[in-house]
Amino acid sequence: MAKVLVVGQGGREHALVWKLSQSPKVSEVFCAPGNAGTAEDATNVDIAADDCERLAAFAKENEIDLTVVGPEVPLVAGIVDIFKAQGLRIFGPSKAAAALEGSKIFCKDIMRRANVPTADYWIFTDPTDAVQFVQEREEESFVIKADGLAAGKGVSVCSNKSDAIEAIHQMLTQKVFGDAGKKIIIEEVLEGQEVSVLALVDGRTIVTLEPAQDHKAAYDGDEGPNTGGMGAYTPAPFATPELIDEVISKILIPTIHTMRKNGSEFKGVLYAGLMLTKQGPKVLEYNVRLGDPEAQPVLMRLKSDLYEVLFAAADGKLKDLPDLEWDDRSAICVVMASEGYPGPISKGHPIRGLDEAAKTPETKVFHAGTATDGDNVINTGGRVLGVTALGDDLSEAKKRAYEAIKCIRWQGAWCRKDISDKARSSEPAPE
Image (cartoon, rainbow, N blue to C red; front, side, top):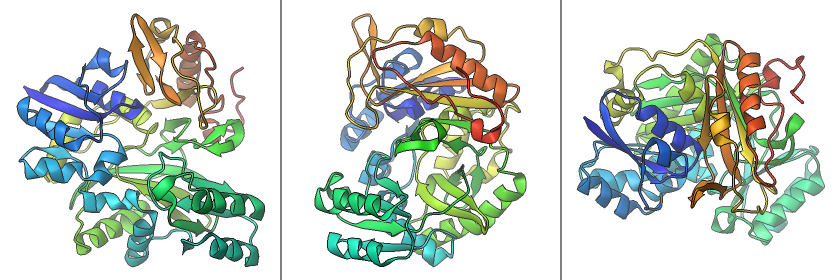
């Protein structure tokens, strides 16, 4: 029987822990550092997700058979290289390959070399040059991106020049994202439906997961600032099998091939955030790990043994596996957030109603920003819970998720009310 270590402490990691613990081949799952939810489904280990050397030491001492890395920070820091140097099996990209997410400029360079469709872009390090560029353009709308990691918040979609100039100054002058914003990219704005396509890659074989749609804006109707994601659903009805074939042939395969030619072979999860434009799918961004909150509804629908799949991927043997099996039903994840998110938040408030919410049929409350304080579960982060439900269709899944949400309370808790409405915009959101 295998022992598994999941690295991270968010909703994605709780979903991984929950799914991996269901494998008949797994005897024990550890999560470092974990949260109040992972403590119920696994054994939490008090080691930070970016303390790569201590995590490797733990894996060695406890004879861990497979380590699965959830968040991007340890991947970009090189946790996979550290584990492999010690002969430890780990699923995720190397430090060199993780630069696809760690540097938006590197990512754009790879896409340009691979001839992958994406938005036009311009790189700046000087705020004066960047502002002059915006002022001289005919367009009014721009996307301003910090080059490095900014916890999902380093992207500003600006509908006018004054907002774009403010975003430039925040990144390059005020340095709100620190070193991550030393360089910025200014992109053209793409229009269309967004969809997330996640693929498991072992260097040569690509296995796509069921497509999902994330909701990045904070408020209903896609209003407000960008967040790490306020909810997601799967399947996304406009992500047809024909579209996925096009994404694999024109986007994923050229990217993986170019990465290998670049000397940074890709193994792990390649997450393509796509805009379905009138000219076809274009890449908004690549991530090098499962999306959060997409992982929660996608893993709810996965029927195959996740341990078996990730073990094979880590060993470069995805081609030997049968096709993944999926639940035909729909799944929705609605994120419950702390007051003030994505800005400063108030922490430490007791969360009530979790046991009652858990009684909702076909529903799982995944924890993200939580911890235990005595007998209480408290909020510790911006995104606190991912209430995830299955249903025969999106309407039923949504109804169940919001029923469970009604049970849960803490001071300042809030969520979007319109998760999945883009798939069926004629239906009203729940009260």
